Image (cartoon, rainbow, N blue to C red; front, side):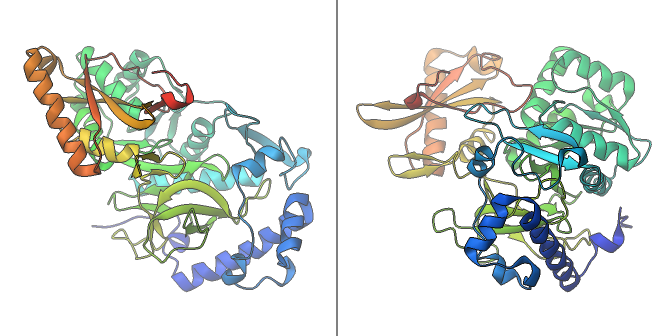
Amino acid sequence: MDLEFWNENVELMKREELDKLQLERLKNTLINVYENVPFYKKRLDDCGVNPYKFSSFEEMGKIPFTTKEDLRLNYPFKMFARPLDKIIRIHSSSGTTGNPTVVAYTKEDIAMWGDAIARQLFALGLRSGDAIQNSYGYGLFTGGLGLHYGIETLGAIALPVSGGNTERQIKIMQDFKPAAICCTPSYALYIAEVGKEMGVDFSGLSMKAGIFGAEPWTDVMRMEIEQRLKIDAYDIYGLSEVMGPGIACECTFKNGLHISEDNFIAEIIDSKTQKRVPKGKIGELVFTTITKEGMPVIRYRTKDLTNINYDVCQCGRTHARMAKTIGRSDDMLIIRGVNVFPSQIEEVLMKIKGIEPHYLIVVDRRNYLDYIDVWVEVSEDIFSEKMNTLEEFESSIEHKLYSAIGINIGVKLKEPKTIKRSEGKARRVVDMRKGEKP
């Protein structure tokens, strides 16, 4: 197979050359924040790291981590490394608890971001002239505009549909003939559901790829999306505080997400000890930006759990690959001493015939003990069965969950279309211990 590359010199760079490039760019970034961000100047002085004499990755380990709370405490502009007349765009998180996190970009940052995403779209076989339906939300959220500029940098045709209005989304798929769609995986499943109701045959459409991110999703859900939409489904990773989408993305081999290592340094740490873990082990992902000017972040704790593979990919690209995230360290549920991730439950559910890919995990406390119930939608055929048959089906699901996870998880079967759909990030967990309601 003949492989093509967006930037062969960067994508096929040898590890020694890549390390050298990263170290040089890291030193320049440390000088940038030392001179322009009082927060980082104090951090570097306190830990004894002199950015002008910085010379090794080992010394990087002395620098304290940056957290979301640090960004909130410096809201809105104190983390900026450039004056406002050099900033051309600001994005922000929703800020549902306390101050939102704010991130800034210079003209050069936007160009770097667009190029990083264009490189990833190219690796998925997309080319200039292809139309790409961008169904991520536009606005302060980084998803929509992040992908938009990457699509345009690629030379492809951007269809800036944004989220929502699902029937219109499907009409655009039919009429504008996009080669790919970008959205959350949960919304992709909802599009498939609405399309089925409309009598749409997705195998007859022009779409060949989907670029999905902004929420954790399993390989089992990937297969579900591919089967329903008749496309190849690819994972893209990013977070606003570091840049937005495009920090990493799969190639057509679907064997890990290629990290844009010329722009970011990735580390994996143990969330409890905050020490680096051995290569290949699962831990919390930490990122340092090394090309951003407007608002670099140093050793930012993402809370996302994954591992990193430094072997050269089958596609020939040499940049490290991160595995699909299994969840976030702060999403982990501890139920009667057992660690449970929503992705573990999803993986079991999605393998069971008759279950729809829509579920809700409900956590509650009864008689001082914590319990999990899973509300699961089933197909019309299943739900029309006799009561005793439904109870047997519930019991079989509970048995499968217990075998995989090791604790008793209650299952409640729900009628089709009774669990709320999402046009953005899906809400998978309701914690009634915190007063949340389904």
